[in-house]
Image (cartoon, rainbow, N blue to C red; front, top):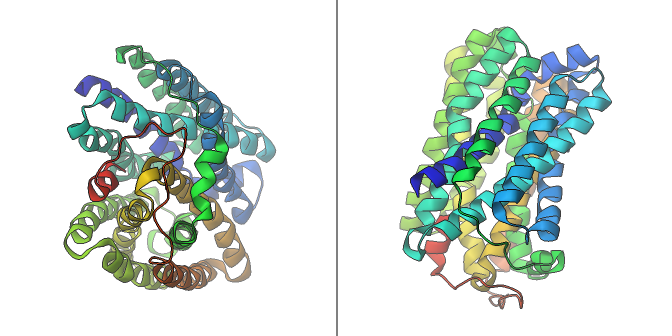
Length: 403
């Protein structure tokens, strides 16, 4: 069992590295492809949009295929997209390649989590999913700083080429998985049906805007840290390492706080804290000590958003938990995409300081959406399970932990 789950986690690790390592390298990518730093940020936008939109659509269309086959094809598409990005001669070529990589990543992650649940008995599904998600956490904590450091020293093309090469390892290891049958077909309409519930919609909107605010800063992290690091990869490395450590700590802390104080109270503290943090990071990152402190606090708050929001979604729609959690996953990547767009606007208007102001304005919008989600909480009854769903009801808090 562990070997099978670690195989799925290894694929998620490679996907995570590709997702997070590009932003710190965008300055060099833009210079190499002869586009501005703001334009280069669109590489993050198109990847995240392809992940958020292409993954669910293709999973709805092809999710009935045998999982081992589907996972292999998804990683193959992902690897091809990274390889094509690494050899891109022009910016449009790189954009098209990142779209390809994002589609492969979205299909892989969604189906890897689904397979992890199928491989584990009912009382161990949460731990099985945690192992697979651990691949992403490891990518943030270790793959991100190491990849960004190496990309700064040896070149971004080598990093993405290596990502493509390493992706072939979990592809080969997929033979360890049993020959499971395809999942029951689920239409795209069924997947988006929960959006008709006002509380679900408001909760997803709050998540999207919170993460947009945070990714606005992250997508310009090389520029935000430029004064503190002087563009030196060796000095950027500890800041990204602190970001990874803060992400892991925030994820763990959020679960404990949500269990003790409830998800509503937890997010009611986290969201305003994150809104302040994204404003503080750019002006604080003028020297390494304040840069490290502010980046660590910001990363912790960033990764404290997901757990309570997932729990609130499951509380709102326990009968469609798997569906709303899938929507939540897409919302995360929509936040990455819109963060790149908002960051480009802020940076174009006022440089690195403008990134913080744009993030702060988005954070204020997130607080309004969060207030709306609290207002609609008791007005919408729990959604009934979709007709095609085969999910077994699980206690709400326990199911939320599986995400």
